Image (cartoon, rainbow, N blue to C red):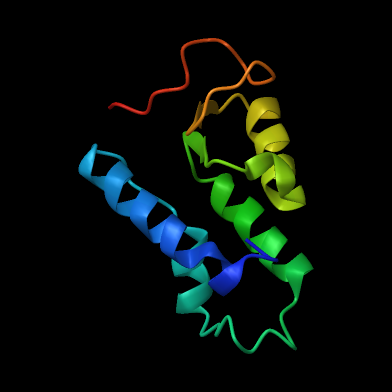
Length: 110
């Protein structure tokens, strides 16, 4: 999310609604940021390592991970994908690509 306008919160929030409407219980990192009181315009004191730890702790509570378009450009999302794979979580992709798993996990229907 770092490096994108408003930490890409609007894209995370749209995907949250879409996945929730499809029957998923969503853990949204943008919502977690807001719950911590983060303002994307005031990132001077933002501790990315703390955020990464928080996101990994949240991932430990999940059955699956959904990777949005462009995840491969995010170091944090790549770590989360690797951990999800290591932990045996299902992995779903917004945009299936040849370098992702080809095991039917591109759709997120419940």
